[in-house]
Image (cartoon, helix red, strand yellow):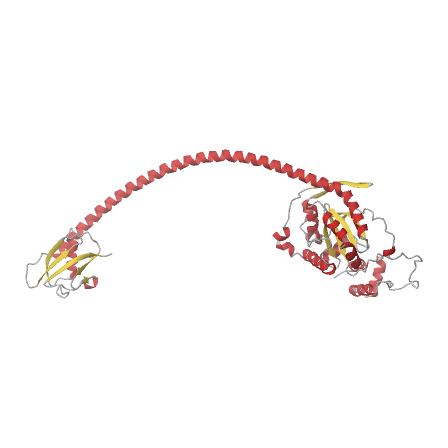
Length: 458
């Protein structure tokens, strides 16, 4: 809940009244309803805002002439001070203070002179595009809404190019560009605001001057960050403009504040004066940064040359070691292959001998299983077997013998070098496969004589 002091401060910021007690009385007369009090005041700004009006509504016998008829006052004096920013404003940006921007000694002697030590300047362009989280921060959204509202109300052609960023981001941008930050606090309900925006801020000469020499940030005091900045800068009158730059310890340096309506010529005069007074420190900071970058670049070039020479030596040494290791690996690989080939030959010879011995045993077993070849007779079948090599073998079998006996006979012959085969007859072609092994020769139609050939199974 907003406390009494915040309501009074906000009412002062909106209305431009400097008398705190008067603002408190107005709020109290409206039951501390901030919106009602502001609406009542702004709807009749020429009326006496005092809830207990004085019988004499104009105690000043010599009222000031209207602003358009007043003589041009001298430019505001340089109001420099350090302003501590609230934590919420610091956290809304990029953390500029952590960039270690140091202010040196400031001295005022007719013309302000000072020295600035800046550490850690570096390009961070495109930060908004690279990190979409920054675009969605509340402070950045408020800034974007202000820019859009300002363009909608006053046009886009001639105006200060307010950055659509949080205050701290804008301050960071100004530091990177070695420029001051032009701050405009917008009070939508103040009666001087529309004319000031239209005739001064949107003046072609003034806006071009600001856009060329400063980074501009604007915020509405209705928004959270704009309201907090108005409190931090102690804005007591609107329209309110200021020139600031970064300082240390969560603070900014307020170089100039301009309060109240001003003509474009007055604004340019004041800003030009501050620009001339701050030019030495900005130029010095830029030159120092360039010198640091040059020194860093020279060190980097020297380090790069040293690293290149070191890497070249290391590369040559590495190549020498790699060549030695390669030759050693090749010798080891050749030795390994020689041993593997020798072992493979020995295994093949042993396996061949084992296969031959197994085949000889198998032939002997098959030959024994056949028994003695029968003599010719009515129950004897004459079988002729042709091999793929063209060789022929024939034998007599009892007609009661099975097809398996024919396979056993083929397996017992030395001319049979085919492990998997089928016995096939022609005219008609018949394959005597595993399903016919139990048939007798007579049942298979091979009695009294048959001609078969050995067909390898692919």
